[in-house]
Length: 88
Image (cartoon, helix red, strand yellow):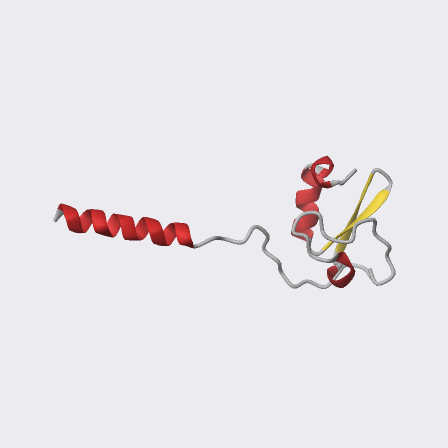
């Protein structure tokens, strides 16, 4: 009985560790404004590293530079601690 319990516990532990959740949840959204001609200072999203030229959905200004983001989630993460994500 104990062996069966421990076997089930180990199997459950292994299966739960094998499932990774994505760090960023992307939701398809239409941008609030037209961002086709916006020039941003970053080639990729500093949070999830998607190319901003292809997936630009939102922008934020930090130290007089415009940074592009693929989603509102990435922008809000950046705004929490922008110095952490800005390459100097």
